[in-house]
Length: 201
Image (cartoon, rainbow, N blue to C red; front, top):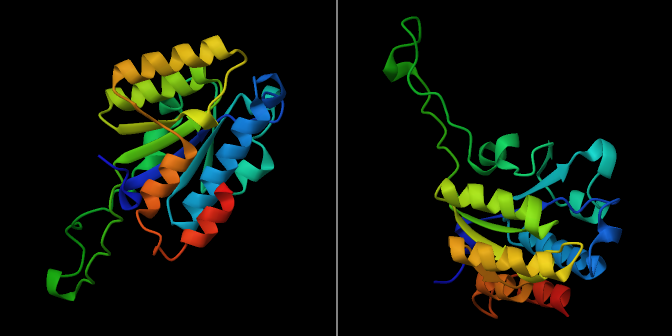
């Protein structure tokens, strides 16, 4: 099963200015997160960011924040309780009307709702805390989740790797930034192939 760009959304968890210096190889993980965000924008994939206790840990890195359609502030470690599912699902359009509305033949047809994208590509910090808890709760909600391992970090490698083991056991797909890029593209004839290739190189 390959990622489908038309069914994907990207979630970037807690790449915060005051947190990143403590993350093992944090600069590398942050660079991959920015690549993911730029690729998503090129291919019209919605991007949602989260920030854990931003009053204490600061906002997300500006290069991440600028590519997010929305950024959720949270105190819980999982972003699901902060409204992540609402961010991922298109708004429900009201149906029908009330007794005082115009007769049906005079009403304008309702605009079609945006199609729901059922696959979440996710990366973030710390892998064994906020990323892990967010991903596990998304899986509980029957969301198809793909974790981008080379864009995820923790303060120690051991914690990061333990998170990946647990996530794989729970049903998350583990991928890399390049795997996401080329599965979203599918072909060297894609209109933004050269732009994406330049981001990877």
